[in-house]
Length: 240
Image 1 (cartoon, one colour):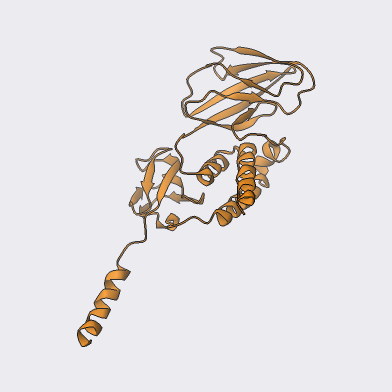
Image 2 (tube, helix red, strand yellow; image 1 turned 180 degrees about the vertical axis):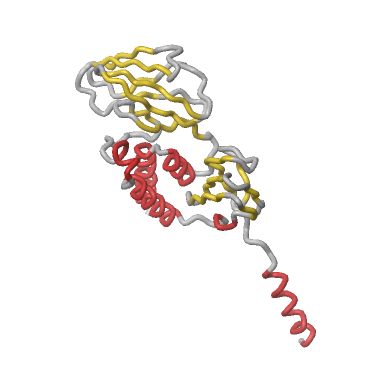
């Protein structure tokens, strides 16, 4: 018994030295540090950032953290052994609300029509859009009563594609237009108006919908994140 008592302090010290359980992190944005968007690291991996460098990462519950240089250490603040779906959803909705109330996002998101599916690309307004890697976009419009023509051009105007909505048609699947690499800007020409949209590529193998929604929010794809969060909310309600 005395022998066990003598071992207790050593055991407590050993347990306190055990690092927190590592969590898989997804790099969503990086400037320096040898990191790149879409890269997976674990929360126990040390990161070194020089002055002026920064990295934004998403944890498995959709939480994000941005580290700025000078910095050296492990991003253990995103470590998590389990994800509470309700808490994760509530946190993402709060993040969405904060983003849509900021000056730069209000014009592009709060008055946008709700998307029926998260991956549709609304071309009725300028702004940021998200597209899964390896997929071609599906163009979408909220109002479909009348026939309508539109044209899509890349920023360098190296090609153009002309489309025509039929009356009652909301979406058009785009043929192979160009090779998407990271981020692609387009000019939409419709109803004698020109405006731009930026398509950000999203990795196809993200851990779950919380990570995906967080990625969309980070990239400014608020309308698509809204559609995804609504699906998650419905799924949680139906599982009760």
